[in-house]
Image (tube, rainbow, N blue to C red; front, top):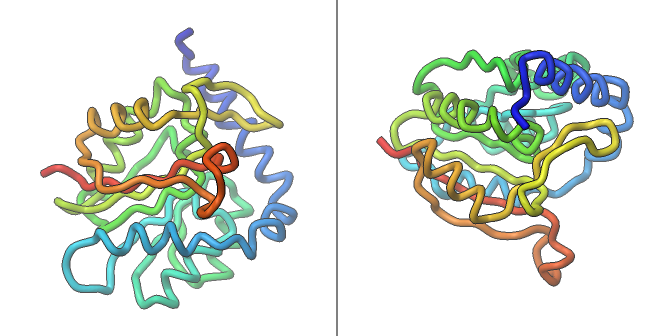
Amino acid sequence: MKLDPEDLAKISALTLAHYEENAESFEAGTRDHDVSQNIAALLRHIQGEPPYDILDLGCGPGRDLKTFVALGHRPVGLDGTPSFVAMARAASGCEVWHQDFLKLALPAERFDGIFANAVLFHVPGQELPQVLRALRAALKPGGVLFSSNPRGGNQEGWNRGRYGVYHDLDGWRSLLADAGFDALEHYYRPEGLPRDQQPWLASVWRRIG
């Protein structure tokens, strides 16, 4: 079923409201999450000499912005939740943009890498192609996109107050290829567990052209 503009506005509003209402508990609950494997996966595929210009898409309260700064890079954050934008600015000292993922306004060919950790699954399936094209356009030629999403059977809908789409590897590969990306690597998280205990699909992609 195709979502109309009113449906899409509702999805954005309610999902962002959920994060806004739970901003403090979300920050406390994710503060110590170890995503160093994901950060390393992005950085090892970026070409050229650091420091790198990195967009932390869906940066939340700023945990990973702080890590990128500590590693010597030049990150910019982006989030649709007002409290997260304020938290991320205060925590990291970085520039943080307040934007809805369905209404991205990104500078062309600005970034060496985009870090989309646990975020793109919130984009409704019918809107994802245009969002991926916007991210591609924001990368420098040959730039790198990292994504990590909860995996599933390509179903979508509401889950505990948030909208989500649960991609499998084949479906995700097709979407990224259509948007102008080459696959670099993928893996499942948390590492070291049986596959049925690894709910997250992480993947890294290079902009073609």
